[in-house]
Image (cartoon, rainbow, N blue to C red; front, top):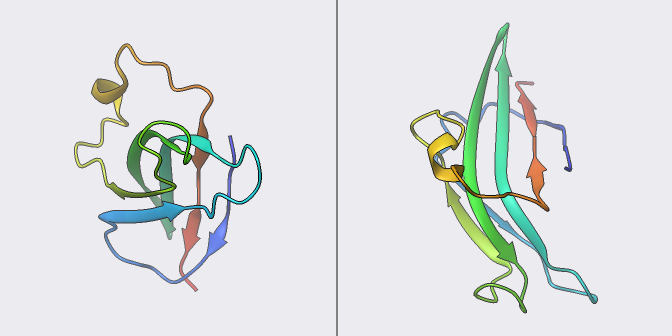
Length: 100
């Protein structure tokens, strides 16, 4: 699992994210389970989950190295979506956005 902390201004309600890589080098593809973005404002922390469960690899799945992900609206943290599915190996991004 990879975790990235990013300090940024508030971006409001996030609905979509775009993630990609350039495919450079052998073995550059990877499987993305989900992206979780946590936004802390004051004492309150909000979490938005963007499920993927796809490869970003030109030789796996559909060959794409770019994905546009839509936020999981039901807040269930994908319990229904992942029921009965394995999500390993997984890369999960946890950017934490703080207002500046």
